[in-house]
Length: 509
Image (cartoon, rainbow, N blue to C red; front, side, top):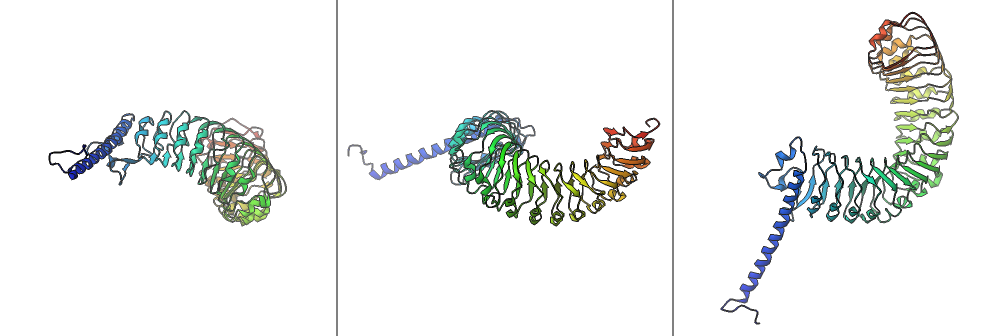
């Protein structure tokens, strides 16, 4: 017992002194951590321009840094920063490496703060981090592989920046990730094949609008709770993994703007019951439009533009009650427009352009009260001009050009006051231009095309009453006579006008 002090000092006193010493040591360590957090915040502030003085007014010594704007501290570990959230404030600076010193940080949200520079690898030291949002800035450079060390990370948002390079394979270490968003950057290379082999909680994967290449990894189709998949506008090739079309939780599927090929599975092989939006535009898909889509009763938008789908327009589309958009332009379809599409009372966009469709435009389409876009350009549609269109009071875009429509354009067309763009070019329409007078009711109209028809008579003086927003007016290659009315000078927004190949006389007003 030689180590015990003598001269009447009891063992209790020694133990108490040792306890107080250890307590002071803990307090000192805790204080150093607090001072480190304060120093880090001040260093971050010093590297920002803060042009409107948000931090200059709020990050002052008059208050504890735990009360500063966007700063939250732990209730359990006093004076330790657990969240730094300064979204939508113009800060104009960089994500400094010092932020890696905020060792208790669980939330870092600097979205839309005009940040530049690269993402420092030091953020990979924030092992408590669960939420990292840097999207909608001007960040550049590569994604640090050290981000893969953040095993507690649930949200990683880096979209809408100028980030380049490849997706680091080390990100497969994000085993708790739920939301991953790298869209609208400049990423290249292939998606690492095993990136999603250990991410069972991933619900949202957004890699669209980059320059990613190669094939879609099979692992994506095995994510059990995936709800949103966006791989659009990349350079992806090959077939889509069949398992993606059999994901029970998937709601949003964006694959457009790639070089994907092959057939979409049909019937039982296509089973996405929760699907709300499917966009496969601008690929090289072939075969019929899969009937399995008919099981997706929550479908709101179907977009299959610019592929090589074949067959007729499916009548089972009319059995999808939530549909607000059907856009299948530029495919190898044929046959008539199904009249039963009028059952889709929520339909806002109907785009069937460039599909080699035949027959008349069904009068039943006049029952789709909320229709905003009707695009039937470049088909072989026949019959007289669809006068029932005047029933569509919310119609803004009417594109019927390059068909074989005949007859007169009714003056009731102008009763659709919401019209913005009307294209009737390259048909066999005839009669005078009295309907132009009625279009003066459409005061937001900015495009009007009636060229390559058989219109006759004079251009009415009321042309000057058309929308002051009109920028393009095409009436060439008709049989118009007389003069161009001087009132056309009222259309001060016109940037393009073509009255050539008519029988007009006199000089320009």
